[in-house]
Length: 140
Image: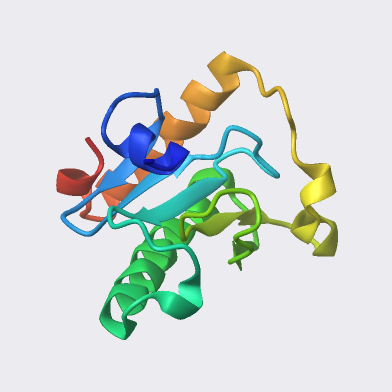
């Protein structure tokens, strides 16, 4: 049975995508710790990051870094967080989001019901920063 992330990737469920390439996608988390919180997910269903081929993990990290740079710019944050947790969905995903302090690393601070317009705005801001940095072909 396909994971919820595979269903999002395949268009069966909605997602606010900010990145698409042949190996991975990036879409906003439905429970963001901070606005712009993005999940970087391989198209291939892999349960844990320790099971991923090294070249795929390198690619995911590179995508997360590119998105993290855009997050810092779009949301004027001093840092971009990167977490690999993997307990919520059995499909490898990297969390990256703008961060200001250590409280931003606590999933208990995630917003379980973010405003739809705020989510749309965060996605557009992030896409704009990615496009400005030369990644426009990957944002739509």
